[in-house]
Image (cartoon, rainbow, N blue to C red; front, top):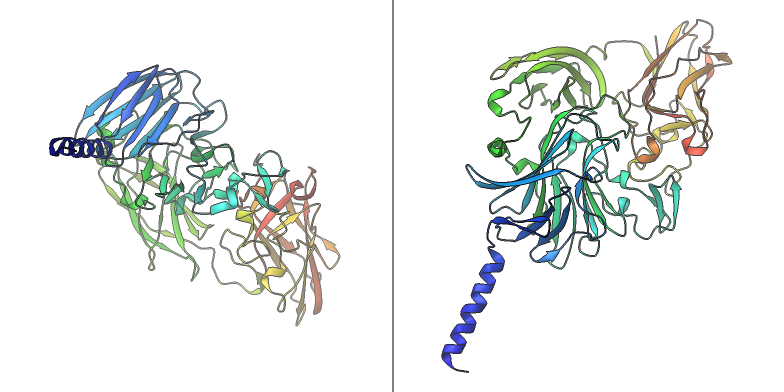
Length: 538
């Protein structure tokens, strides 16, 4: 081969490599779609439907990742929308896709050189499907893996269903997309991944100020469903809903494509997002903070401060000495709550003003001195340590890996905590029995039963040595399955029963705690409630 020909081939090869590595930032219109090129070193090119905002193709490093039969979109697709595109110049160059319906405006923003989609959704009404979510439907042969919980939500190859159409059996194990959840306060990134060069596609949400449910809410994050691997960002849903939905701007949230491992939301800066012109965006200059000290949290437990009103929600962990600083918050008056782990111990109000830092302390008074005769569990707002509490987040209660539910008998002073059930199901393990000895008759006493979640109106009724305590009224209804979907966080009802003098005796005593309800159901969908702690005191 002549030297000239060799030189020409070398140049062409180099140009081809450079073209593949550093694509041209911009967009074109073709066949009813906008084709957007992020101009990134690891090329990200995707297409958006001009009629309904569906993302119909996603190519990362030349590999198609989009599932072909269903697309990537907000909710379950908008059906139709007014879709526009523009390039915006600011501190960076951006491409912004805007999708508008009568009650929703959805934004897809690309920043030059960044293999990420920056997303935000502004709503004035809850979507008709009943939930506000972003769902990316991707190819399972390219992205089969799920992070951080792995196969617990991989339902590919299921042989049967356990419950409804969302809890499946795979290789003898129960699996569900619900088992991929993480508490809002713990969220960093959740991803799907795979490929010979290990691509990760990850969702990160710097804040959930317009979502509902508070710091301990959790929802679906990912699901390899066989036909597609689905990656979610749930913003509002009826999954164990404890407060009204919030309207306004949800986001920004980021779908990042990476070959350099798992990204962290702590390294994400979205302060520039206001440059692209987004409805509902409140810049840092239009926000304020709250600082202070929280006290009264039981030693060894985490302090969490939570602020909320009808428009927004925020939270912050306290330091070892109780100090806290809120995130930047929208102006307004907020309810301010202090938790020890997840158990509410104080409530106050505070007003936030733009451009100012408000100093306000909060003190819990729950952990006051009392004569505790015995206590089972800790007041932490969770079923910590009880039987199957270490498993239920990632599997169904019927799973063979679960320990037997009972009915169980717990003997104070000798039984391990795992002999006490995390939940009482009316048709499975009802009632739970507590046996204990007293050195002398204590006279009148109080039994306190702290719960975390009730299903189908279940609440506890006690019997003390043959004396039946009063039947509590039904708790506020949460119209959603709970523990069978790996959820435990509800309204956190606490029941106290005054036990008259003469009912407790010196020597051996027995208390039973039963689930009562006016509703019915079978096995693990029978009325049930989850324990937090049980205490007998004077």
